[in-house]
Image (cartoon, rainbow, N blue to C red; front, side, top):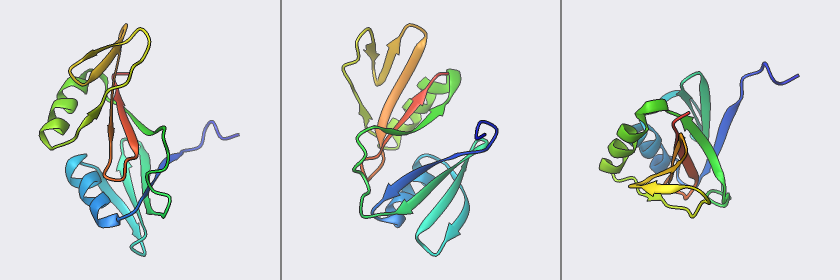
Length: 125
């Protein structure tokens, strides 16, 4: 039923201007649409990320968006770190941390937060 349909990630933020700066200037997403200064839709690859104003921003304690970046993970982590992004470090069984990247076998993952505390990540898959 839904397996052939396009989906999008939805991210709640408190201040749309701060979020806009982060998602556009720090992460490099391109804006597709804006709705009444309450919602911004960004293009990300073949998908969309919807950033919207909400009083519940930052209350999710789990990852809300994952970007599959392939072999570019080290470069992207470095570029984001140079833009001031701070990466999260988690205690994950069987994983080692090399700089800001968690490694478990062939899988490499890096987690970071947006200005509202929403958890985002990069994976080399």
